[in-house]
Image 1: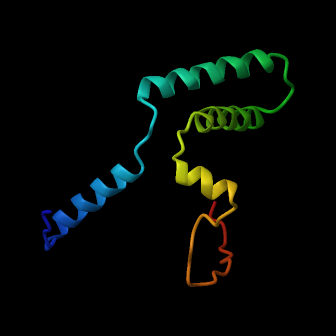
Image 2: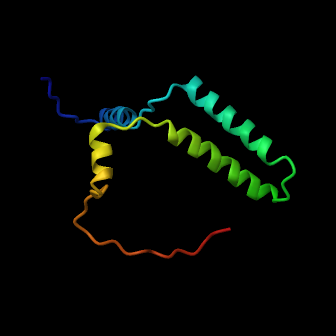
Length: 106
């Protein structure tokens, strides 16, 4: 096994990029994702031809429909499924966090 100490900032950034890219890689290829988004959009348009909702609300519903379509195709590993079925927590932390209310900037 090769182990190398990362000294420079450039090497560190490259390592963080590589690990993040590896951990968050999508199980769907681009063309599969695009096909699913097109299908979701067509279904959405067919169902809401005569909708009286505002443009903002229709946009929100379309994005939600696309997200749900893509999320439904996500592959899960055995340990992920077992953790969900057994109702294990999805994260562990040693701290209690408080909500921080910030002033919105417009």
